[in-house]
Image 1: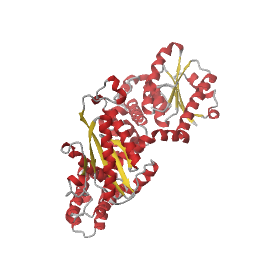
Image 2: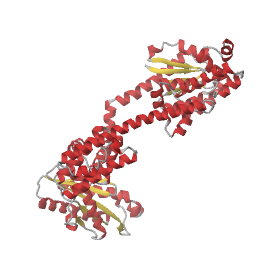
Image 3: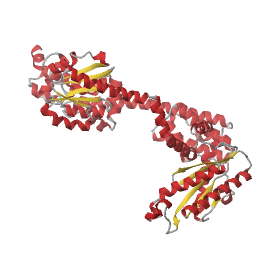
Image 4: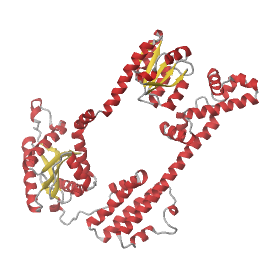
Length: 545
């Protein structure tokens, strides 16, 4: 069933629409009716309608203002405008609010039903399209090259678990499995080209090389793909300014593999020179035998490319220029950011997995004790940074007078250290959850205090309160309703009505004055709200006291 709200200040017109159609027969239910925009907005906040049918000319808040506010609150709600012939030009202004239909008044039930059936069909189609497996498959197939490219870029730029890499390689039909691997990066030297160079397919237009950098990259990528495929040695793709080659061999002999790599890369280098008359620097990272070390190899290939400014027009193997360097496992900025974000925003399981992964890396790398200590200090500093950022009391996390560095570094079993750090992180996460819950209450309490002190402000709104509290309206509305069981509008109206009752009891102010004192610039709307809440007008209430 689709939920509808009918909004029209003419009761006869409104009731006629409601009573003349068997709504459930056609897949609709009336979720509310309103005689003005303010009342409609309150209902919309509460029921989140699928369709709003609204008149344009109404008291207190017109239909256009209502359309604007509903579109901001509920972007997927369909809006149907009811309008008199003389208002049609006015109704056209509603185009910017994505109004789905216009109906001229007086409206017949047959005409309205035809419109609603068409709107329902559109909504059914939208839902069906989202659920349609074939559509999803088509979307997936169209997105496949982008998803594949994104995956390839991710495995070289960040640490991903081996099982996940293997699974995704199969998903994206990437054939690079073997017993030994390498990363090669090709950096095109755009500042080292012949002045006579032009792309082959645009040579007649004499477009200079530096105006076509992206076309050149694509051309070089195509050359790489063809040569790599011919040698059956791996795959190539673009990542930022590099063309990346992930190379592999079923034979784990380093020398044989390196010979194949150099043969392939030399052919690529010569082809780039021949077809594009430009030079390039090719860097080869350290060889590796476990696919999850691919990001480390990528970093070493980047280092190799950086030597291109010294070793011109060459293929550079990192082990040749940095033979003394052993690729060490370090606690870098990327790992720090992952750990920090998981403690602050992730689930408990995510935090545990990240810490377990860090310690697995320590074990697998067989690092020295000195490097192990440095690595641990990096992890501990990240944890302390979270504590500092969120102003958490250390006594709530560590035992009294506990020197965390000393306690950890004196432990002899690495598993013991791992479990201790997991326990500390989970304590911090529990503290964060409690603090956030308290924060929700503080925000709501602050808003209630502000409402109680400023309900007489006729401009008081959700947006105004949120601006003062520095929170978004959507977030505020959610936590306010969760804490108070009322929408903001309901709560504000109740406060104003109780204040009005008190003034009617204790003063001789006229209704006009009371309306202003409780935040209503429109006396008629104040009287309307009062009667709606108490089933009695303000004057009748005063006389009954």
